[in-house]
Image (cartoon, rainbow over all chains, first blue to last red; front, side, top):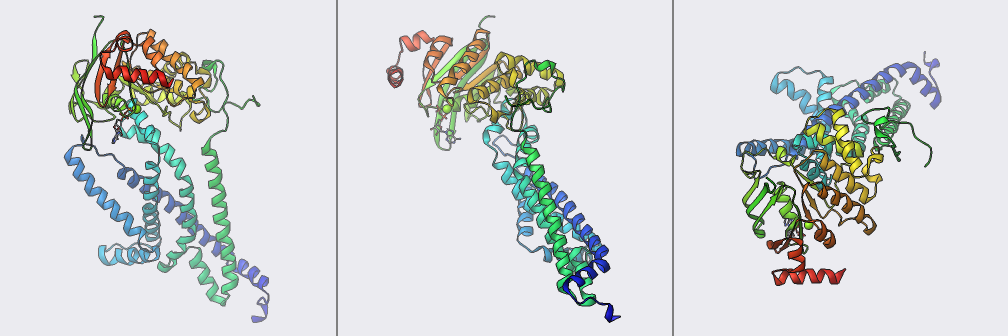
Amino acid sequence: MATDMPTSFFGWVVFVLHQYGGALLQGAGVTLLLAIFGTFIGCIIGLLVGIVQTIPITERTNPGIKIVNKIVQFIFAAYVEIFRGTPMIVQAMVVYYGSMAVFQIDMSAMAAGFLVVSVNTGAYMAETVRGGIISIDKGQTEAAMAIGMNHIQTMCKVILPQSLKNIMPQIGNNLIINIKDTSVLNVISVTELYFVSKSAAGVYYRYFEVFFVTCVIYFIMTFIASRILRYIERRMAGSADYQLVSDPFADPTGVFPNNTPKKGGK
Amino acid sequence: MQDKNILEVKHLVKYFGRREILKDIDFTVDQGNVISIIGASGSGKSTMLRCINLLETPTSGEILFEGNNILDINTDIPLYRTKVGMVFQSFNLFSNMTVLENCMTGPVTVLKRSKKEAKETAMKYLEKVGMAQYINARPDQLSGGQQQRVAIARALAIEPQILLFDEPTSALDPQMVGEVLSVMRELADEGLTMIIVTHEMAFARDVSTRVIYMADGVIVEDGTPQEVFGNPKSEKTREFLSRFTDNN
Ligand SMILES: Nc1ncnc2c1ncn2[C@@H]1O[C@H](COP(=O)(O)OP(=O)(O)O)[C@@H](O)[C@H]1O
Ligand SMILES: [Mg+2]
């Protein structure tokens, strides 16, 4: 048996790929799943928290709403501080074991993992979204209000589309961080890439070779993610030029004739 | 009903913190009036205009629009603002929208018009300001004068009863001032009620039905262009106007 074992580094790499390639890919799949959904849900949480945190309170606001708003703001601020102020690896332990001990909820490791990644990302995104909203020129809000938009319309039509474009790079950053940082979920035995790698490495005590492969897999995932996000960012920036329309009503593409084919240089 | 009173500002007072910026402002606007507001920078012209469409909340006083006090707690402010449009010094076109979308979003989002109807309205006003060819452009692809003309079309697209202008040409290069003023002149000729804060004295003199001179939060002079420019009652006005012609 032992005579069949590889002797060189590359020999071991090939061996690891052959023996554990499938398992590692499955681990990578779990990692991506956690990272993508965690980032997505985290963005939604962050968006909601960030939007609520920027609701304007004026002299005209009803006093009841003011009190409710104060309480909600306090809760959200505490949420952001607590989750940004503690390590995700510790959050994972507290959520996984705490859910059983305190709430008698038998949460699967995977569910606990999702929860921790989402809520953690949400705390970071809340700050990013709040910053993104605040950074939009006040003139945009005033112009929207001046044509009769209410706060919700102003947010949906004007402020959020602009902030979202500005915070796209941060969303991408969070995805990449999550691809890497979901590795801490191995402490609660989520079968993501790091957990699978550690198990595989332990069998033959080939830590370097296995983790070399793992390293490459992580890099491929983050690299592809960052390229895709870069592409999306560029798409969102819009086209660099526009064309004059000689007879706007004759335009075949209808109400928003944005996609008319480019005319050559003019 | 030639002189139908549309807007009436009574004892308007505005404090920012402990500073009294507007001190007991009183004036009325009749249907079809074009009122120019002149005065030194910092005299409270913008604050007054912004109080009229409630971008600032007045500290006390009354603003009557068609007889109703809009400072009443029950006022539907967004609805009121569709009747009182505003054009800003810095244009403030929505940077996430094309020219056409900028002019359609009011009718569609606020007035709940169909997209087809909104496009027709938007095109009508974009044509009026000479920007119909540019419907696919984004604001940052246009010159200042073009942006301001689109901003005027956007304000007109909700078909307000009064249009407020806060120094609409002050952020423009000199060669673009004319194109914006000529659009405004045309609107005045068509009988749109307008309140215009401006430093363009020739425009104020030629186009306005009334000129108001403000200093330190009070209305010092309120009269016809002939009265204010030709024969000002107050020494302050005289001084301001002479300083102005000197600087030109
Ligand atoms: N949001 C604000 N907070 C505090 N002070 C303000 C605010 N807006 C304007 N002011 C002050 O009110 C005064 C009048 O300003 P403004 O109405 O902009 O004058 P004008 O438009 O005539 O130049 C100025 O002294 C200005 O500093
Ligand atoms: Mg001003």
